[in-house]
Length: 361
Image 1: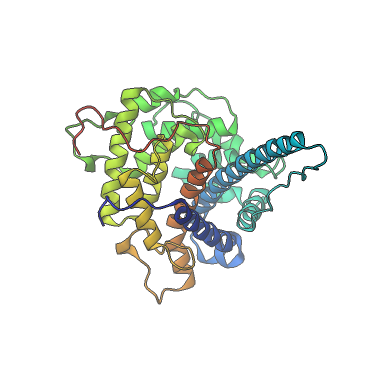
Image 2: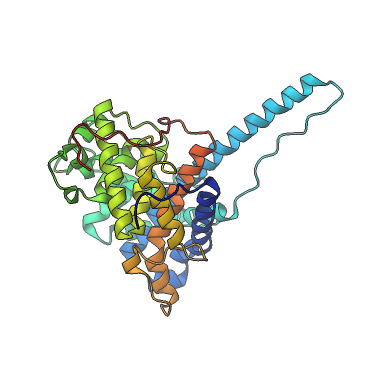
């Protein structure tokens, strides 16, 4: 598929988002049901629940911001109406009805975070244990008790040198800084600008092959710098142009390869850099690819076109292959629609990325 397709309209993105969010809402409970606990390997299930909690944080926050903006607009309209005629009574401001898919995600996350049986699962794989404990503490939803099981897990995870720069890759250092900040724990980690300067994305020169960049490393670097689109990544002009150039080129390549999971991440990375993926050529092509790949049930049955789940797959196999890509698209579109609702507090969106000085496409 080429990267010069017509830009999708907002309705198409809303449909894409509704499908992905609906699938996640209907199926996320499996992660903590007896069948899911029996059928799914422990560590991948723990990681999937952390991803679900991250989606919940962003989805709930985006929904609250959109609802607040809508309420404020309603108040303004009501005030203007009242001042225009004293004999007319303004209707009361109505809050948006609860989103059943968001409610389903909330129920699963809150159930897991309240369970004393879950923290021991975080340490089953020793190499991930302390990072999982930090993330588990950082992503605790507002609805759980402050002294719930996550507090002890967090305290255990941050003991020792986790919150120092000792023996950390730039990527792990940045991820640790992000979750330490969310968890509101003291740390001795580098500031975000310095962490970007030592990242693989910043170090990629114009003469290097694009293939030297790892898409997950690039996108998650930007997610953590920009809090998934809730804040300005605070890159200087040259760094911003450099990052935009690399992300747009990676998006073009990901679309060409039919990589649904990576394409979804790159669309969100464009948004984090202040681009409007509905109007950049690569972003429009990416959203078009995702719209074509989405199943009638709202899922993305695999990570790519070459990884598509066969029609005779078992329900568990379909879930395992669909979960990651579908969650990524749900998260990406939640953030895109938040910005379109006029509640973005990050960079202003622009139509296309300015290529980095000397950057070859």
